Image (tube, rainbow, N blue to C red):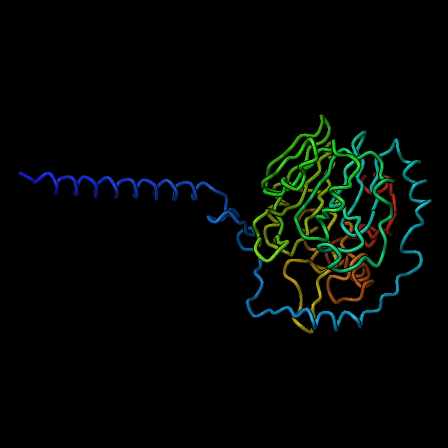
Length: 357
């Protein structure tokens, strides 16, 4: 007969290892069910096969500041449209569909009775408080001059896209907010906030739906929150017309898969600036060059492509007016007519019918 003390020890050991095995098995099963971009620690990563920043790359703020001073900051006089004309153009097109560039990654996109704003940044600098790069061109409009906005799209949390001051002062708190996972906490004063994972879709109305798609990028706002919030692009589908508003992105093979699944795209709006960091290192793997932007658009089977994310902040070391030149000059190499590689002026308002056939 087994003594009770030994029996209790064996029973306890069996119970302990059974519970441990069951718990680990459940955790393993749970992780097996999660998408590739969800990591066990709650952070996120880029799609499988995406480029990875080399560990040998070192960013030096002092060297960047030194090199930045060498950049010619001359802005062509006709690059920024007079505000009075912008307001007049918006008023004249209030009953039409249009796209307007406010600056950097901020656009107004109007479909029917619905006006969308993308990554609105109206502050004088892109950083916490008074820190971060200053704007060298003003936004086309002030916040209080915006037309009624119905949908607010935020692609990721970097300071040149997620502007806390703009979020707080935004005049339309009843707008429908679409943000990546774990960014909803910044919109406490808004009445309709929707966090989205990749491939999730939200129906805005009978004619308009928006799908959140992957991008090759990352997230960070402080020293301790790297990749703790998601990032991504928005596919806007209106009456079978498709506009892809890209998150900041590097080139990735996954765009070919997105093209097969969601293409053809009528218009891709994509970053063409913030890529050159020589002499520190060659380029950022998380921002496309103008040529890579064209390659992404080609992979997406996009009919036209519009360059953004340039002409507002100095975030890298290429000449400030270089991105649109390279973008236009290389369009035909990637299967686009020069006229289908679009460059806007800040404040330009264009009827959608002139862009999307």
